[in-house]
Length: 174
Image 1 (cartoon, one colour):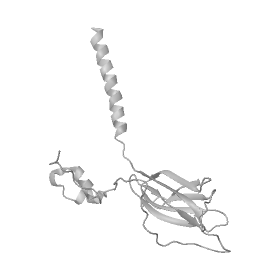
Image 2: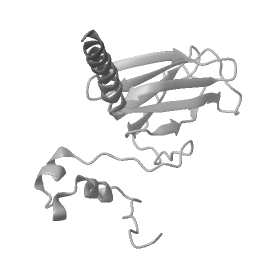
Image 3: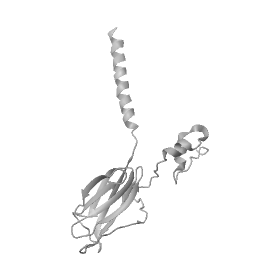
Image 4: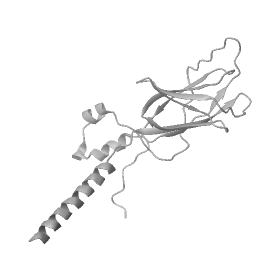
């Protein structure tokens, strides 16, 4: 009589463990990363420069310092628009703006110019930043599009076709 109760309790314990593991596996990815190198006008690396990433929607700022090779890295930044700023005493501050999407990994070079008595550098337009670190296709479909677009067959995976570079699978091939 006790043996079936033990088996039932054991099965329930295994089911609970499997349920928790399955829930953790369903976490969404909403991060991107930014790294780069800070150099001076002649191309020499600038160690010890303070680099900050400020999310413009929330004004949350994350800071780091460049290493001996002038490199910096922000591995887990939430998706959104950011302003990158590099600062070191004796140099003029440099600012770059970019938009992080899901899973993006940008390599952003930053060049510091020698500061004069009262110099201010203001960049109004940057060349588009290319993501060379990854070859994946990632994007975000806005909620307004999800709600307003008709869905032929009600397949939510068809929303992925709205992202540039995504093509439908060929179900007729083997």
